[in-house]
Length: 222
Image (tube, rainbow, N blue to C red):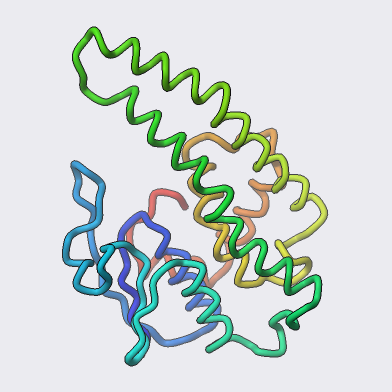
């Protein structure tokens, strides 16, 4: 039996969604973030040394890192016939989007979050304008343009494709769901990117996604 070590408001919600789409039985062990630090509890370190979520256990296997988990579930419990054949362009595209979500898009969203927190953090009054100035300049000259570039890229791609790989949903769609949901929830994706908005609304309306929400509990990005 698969066990999902699920942290509230985290990337592990997309693992629950994928398992629901696969109609694969699983158990959930829930963890709550510290309300002050918003970090995962130390109890997660008993599952994996980094103490991060998602982590799943499947028999004797302990699997961490969203991309690895999603790829493992696709190849172990998914329809083998629907997986791209190695060496084909679709196989390249599948692996590209699977790694792109966390390797290219998410780092800039995380940088934006960090610098926004810097501006809001308590500090001596004389340091406040310096910190704000650095954060604003970094956001305007580096982080903001990078995020725009990535979102423009995704918007254009989804203008030509219903799902990341074309007409059918794939494991890559589960992987990219978290950064896009976070972008919508934080107002980074506006009305000027209807393809992204429609894409997120489309998969959030799926029955399997709704079941995953019910089982996973409060999730601020849906």
